[in-house]
Length: 350
Image (cartoon, rainbow, N blue to C red):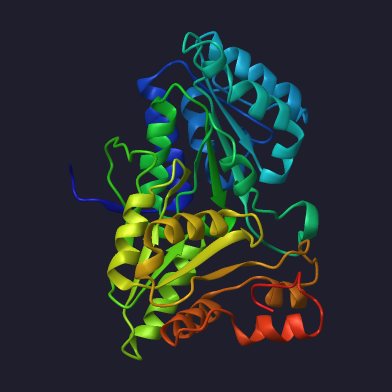
């Protein structure tokens, strides 16, 4: 394999799509705006220019119908790649994704396959508020039959998507909009990152941070802050949520004895709770401190930029959580103040 060049996250997605389409003529890309000048943050324009409107084409705003069409097309031999500008719109397609795409292989005893990739965007930006900035990965990771990936680096974005494009099962790829302009090493030739394998983004010995999607960026920044104080943080990037690489996560926590989990979704009933449960079941007697979770408070997203600054946790909250687990604390002081006011649903950065 040649030395990797630096590509932006969006460029890595575009390259993965073009290389996969060149290798497999069954792959078609569809969705609102995939063929326009912006091409979904630059992730589909290259494929449109290379393969044209026969394989990369715009669609009406009819999410449920299009998802059903893609499921049928997949079962008949194509590999559709359906792109959503926001993952919020996936809520309109739940029946097709959950009851059809995820279940046909099981219900047919393996006779029917659904090679189907859905790309959707999560994350905050410019006051998009409660209906256009949600991170709904926990809903979809709950469903057997779906694979859910959340690459945090350009290299993993290409490698995981190359795998998704070559599998015969439905894969949901959730991409954080704040990652599109980040850069990192990406090999030129096609390569495949196995779905269900986590990676260690930074090695350390004192505390493990399991960080999801853009929270990997925040965790790396927190680790630099903490390193100046002599605290060495190990950062594990799950890369996929279903299947989840519990083994690597538990090996890291067994080494450090402490765990902080950082998720882009809500705190309650979410990914952070699942990871905490698995670690607790496997390593309860080896934990040196209670597990801490950094996630969104259990309220809808505000539209005000000032409220957004409070709503979204970042590197400073992660650094504080690491210090708390090193001191053996289970709940932050800010969470305590919220509870003392009787506002128990406000958890996370408050």
